[in-house]
Image (cartoon, rainbow, N blue to C red; front, side, top):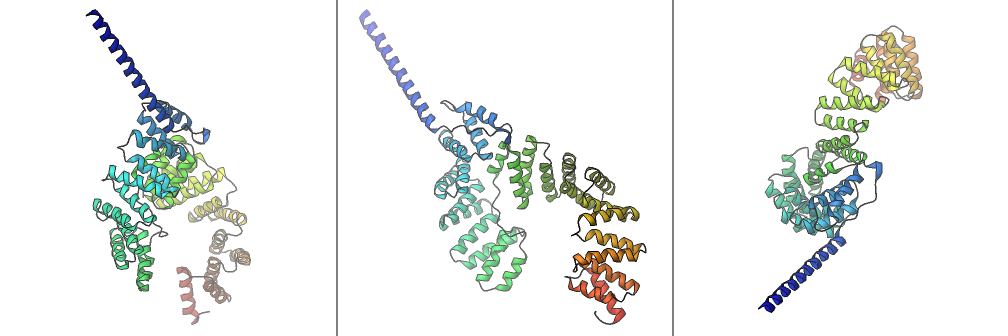
Length: 476
């Protein structure tokens, strides 16, 4: 009996040792597999991306060994993606496909990088996977349709765009995608119908009327093509559907300049709302970069928020008081909102910071002239005219003051010097024509003829022309 008990204990011990050994072997196997899959820590980037190296290193500690901290791996991968470390980002996303296989975000973001490299054959299966994992997410169907269309898979592209349209009836990106499928397949009337529907749904959507003009031309309707082409907003380029999953990456950005470049592109493409989170993130990293405040002001201005735009520009000017371009944008804004006291202060402060600025002397001259301080305005315009001999605005303003204060000879001399270098300067010739009509100068007809020949007549020049005809009965 005792012997039997000893044998039982021994057997249990052997099984325990064997089981433990199997568990150790299995865990070691997982660790070996993870070591092969684990993304590498990129080389340090230093001061170009403040705080990035430390944040990456901190994230990497969470997935050194198996089992993996998925949140740390996700943080690491998106940090790499947002900061241009794309090789490491792709490694991270591929690892996330294994450890977090139910999330559509990872195949989607990995496909975005691969598509940017033109590797559609690798991106398409990932995009298809993303739509299976999150079939109710519209942007995933849009990206799948775009990739299929680029890969000449018209049927698959059409199915993806159709699903997007089912999820969001009237979606212009879906209509535009379906129209391109129709056009590529030679179905011109179907393409026309889709594009007309898109234009009706969103008239300022630039891609649809631009392509619709092409369809009208191919259908033999040049008049409709020309009329449609005139309705195109901006440069007519197609701008893809906003991607909320990719925009979220702004929170991971650590390179203020890269964020500024990305935001500037969004503003230039007419998508200022998408620029704002990029700029706000950049300002967290570098709150004293005047360029960031300036671009934020532009984005806010595009969105009609002049109060926020003004605050951003004022901050930019405070940070870079000698930057004439930034101050010039603030001057334009203050003139638009008609805040004259603030405008005068900004110009005066600008001249104190950059006393050799021709543009600020010109602005100071305008303010003084409009306020009736003509003697104060003259030296400002004289300075601007000397500093920028190729510009005509300051000499014309100076001549107008001279004519208005009875110093005709001085005004004529200023314009004569200007016309020696710019003989077709219409504003100068218009001033001379007005002076000639008021004073009966025999050269008036010649000045008026030159002004009319210098380009499209301004309203003031047209009025002078009509006055000359009434007085003299003929066009000069």
